[in-house]
Image 1 (cartoon, rainbow, N blue to C red):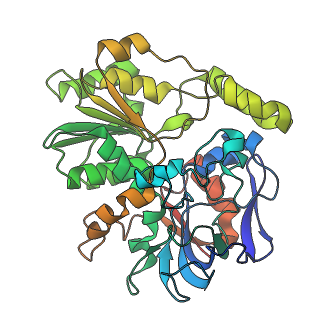
Image 2 (cartoon, rainbow, N blue to C red; image 1 turned 90 degrees about the vertical axis):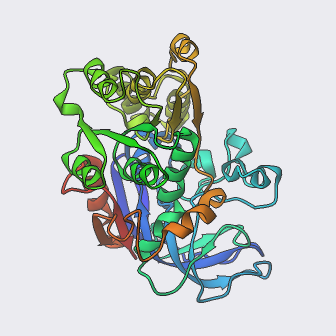
Length: 396
């Protein structure tokens, strides 16, 4: 089959790889009909390269048709249409039972000290072959795949794999009071969708911050009050502008949908770049321990949120040694929640929104739909934020 493989920093290729097969009785094999390019894939494209190996298959936003199932998959049949969550979870361990599927005790990558295995996402998360391919082996298919109706286009449901539950959890963790206010930092796919979900769930004011014109325009069309970073001389000026809209307090909640891609720390970016070109035995520990995160967005969120407010971190952070302003967090009595989205915890809440009325705008959420063969160009375009690329779907 054809698949998108990682070959090095900013080097992805479409190659012939072996077809997946049933390996465990709870496996299924899916023929992919749509699969997304995620902002966190860009971390593998540039930032997290020390944890990758040439030939790794990328991608974790799959949807398709069941081709084959193992003998212990009772609820799926060939021909079923399914969306597959980006994390692999068993559904019956303590963590899954508690709605924390990203901490699944059955698939935890204990050798790396990490949580549940993920499709297509580095050795830290199990080096499981990913979903930017023609076919996908799905472990624990007796629990993970979400069956969806035949008929509507893939765009209606494909975002159940990642974008929708990630944005939903961001809003849930933000704890926005009904009629209250929230600022979303970063209007990529997750931040954009978080704005839509916040409005749909009763937020009174939604502020969106970015510096890419196409992203800002998309958010404005959905009723978001946007702030263009390019129009401010610095963080303080931006914060004051948003505080002026909230009686001087700041918003009730702030969602950081930027993560480690934030601009603002030249030193941290230098460490990221150095780690990417080092031998893996050296680059990996450097990337894990020595301040690889670029915390500009997080520090802005901490300053921006009102006293007693809530921070929801949904952007991916990758390092362990960055300083945190603990005095400010404590003094402002800020609550903070974060983590990878627990897809199956939220999928039942989200499905009622995926109707013909399309209140979240999923049917036209993608800006680009391209064949798998165009993956190298799509990655480059997305990384450079060119050609209006906000959300890209591959159609194998």
